Amino acid sequence: MKVISSRELNQDVSAAKRLARLEPVFVTDRGRPTHVLMSIDAFRQLSGQRDSIVDLLALPGTDDVELGAPERW
Image (cartoon, rainbow, N blue to C red):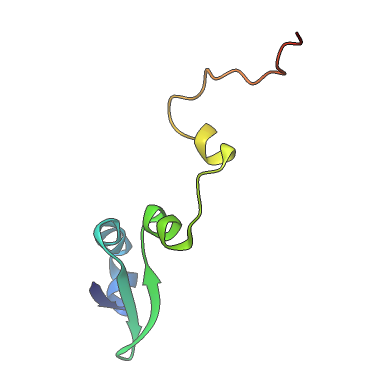
């Protein structure tokens, strides 16, 4: 686990986000942990969430997916 100060987070948010892709990043204020930054995948795994249809349709390359009513028999 990586620990950074809130000042470091404010100075380079992109670096903190890169670190959070690999492992949770604890953010401290005056030396005390106050927040945790983690990837959405890590959060979903931790919380037991699964992708919703909205998440799946927002993925790149799904522009041509047709959503229609199923044909009747």
